[in-house]
Amino acid sequence: MKVLIAIDGSDSSLRATRYVLDHADIFSAKPEITLINVHLPVPSPRARAWLGQETLDQYYAEESDEALKAARSAIADKGLKAIEITRVGNPGQEIAEAATRIGCPMIVMGTHGRSGFGTLVMGSVATQVVARASAPVLLVK
Image (cartoon, rainbow, N blue to C red; front, side, top):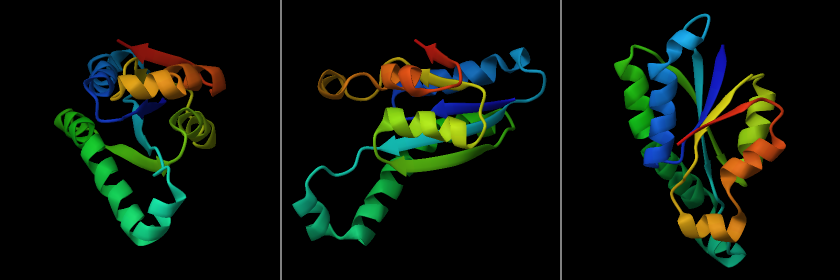
């Protein structure tokens, strides 16, 4: 069974990854894991123009690589491999759309991300995913 795990580099997203790995027996076969990391875009058009697309792409790639590192390692320790998706945009929307696009029947994510302040300003990513996704969402505390 395909499982999409949302990763933001937080302890909560690593717990979600470990939950899937520790409960792999609930799947009929080894889970096909896809990790997704969505980075919010740099908000200022002036900053984006000044930095240039190549610099921004490198920044987003480095940030995603760092966020995915612990989950990637935990998966490798279990002898599994994961597909990785990185996106820039609205995390709730991108996660829900990715699950639909790849035909993933389950999304797993942590309940608390990296930014408490971001949750107050933008709304909870978990809440956005639950509202937008057509697949069931398993939230790991």
